[in-house]
Length: 173
Image 1 (cartoon, rainbow, N blue to C red):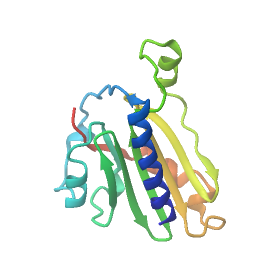
Image 2: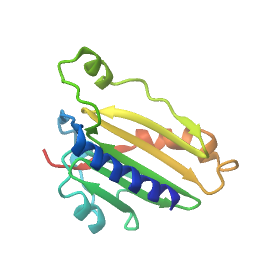
Image 3: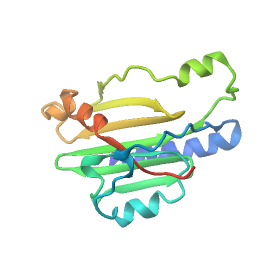
């Protein structure tokens, strides 16, 4: 719950800062792959409603795509999907806003937007990874109720499996 509140505050800050001097990153939509298109059954209502107007590819772990208890906070340039696990909370977020005025022709900007090796970090009882795909900044955060003893938060194996199981479930072009 603490994490959800923190993200809500950060989201509000991003929106106010975006209006002040930031902007929106351009999205390079991926070509459709069969794993993105095959839907076994209808997505839960919470996922369909909250992701209707998001203008970036929406990633979610394929293991939890049909979880009806997920919570979603979103606007057209940002989303956070929270999945409540036994003894932990998993969050997937995507954000295409930025705070500095940078032209897309800037060499430093182009270098920053290239894919970089994925690293998993343990800090403050959480296991996290940040990555960039399609010109969008994404993050996976796992917060455990028992961060010192729960292997999901002390070893990168669980979050790496989640990362490798991400699929696109929507977004508007």
